[in-house]
Image 1 (cartoon, rainbow, N blue to C red):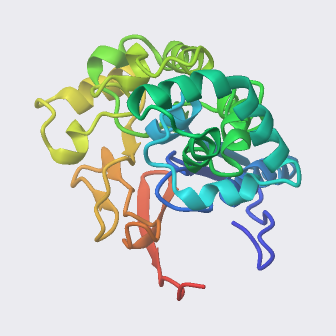
Image 2: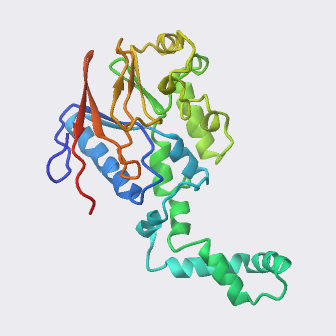
Image 3: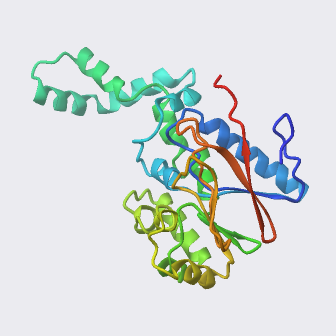
Length: 279
């Protein structure tokens, strides 16, 4: 779908990225920038690039940064980063000093500041600002969907249970975006382990019999394509073609199989690519 320089050559093809671009590795921003650029190039050519919301995008956008690779911050450092952090410390200095001295009385402010800065490396403030609803990455994320149907194929990051399928695709997308916009890390949908972003039942084979068929029927789809739960050996297709598990741990953080799924009508063709050496 792209040429040697990374530009769209896919014509009217549709590329679906199923979420979790962020976390665990240090180069999410360049990947997102590529997706944003390719979205425009594909649209101009009559094609389409769909980037779904994964649970990790929802996490970072609502302040849950536990899986963010420290190397991510370097992409956000600017010549003004140190001054920005200085101003941030000045705004909380009294409270930080009081809390520190309550634990260790008499601490000098210089030592307190060093400890505080260790929790806020350069680029961290800019990273969090970028993921706010009015930030560059937050704006991109809120323009995406959590679920999409393309030619009868339902794409969703985790999986769609019948109970949620009854709500409808458009309503689910609106609610998930609304929860992220509101900054709700405890949102009903974006945190529910059975919700579209976290569901692992289909990937693990623990969904009750008939659930897949019920969910597909409720939204008018013929198959479900899911990610979220890696199988490092590669893409897994169900014998009846109604479920495609495409997360093969392609990030170098997992070291799984580099793969992509090609869909033409009812023909599903998994592809693999050799992993290039680390730079």
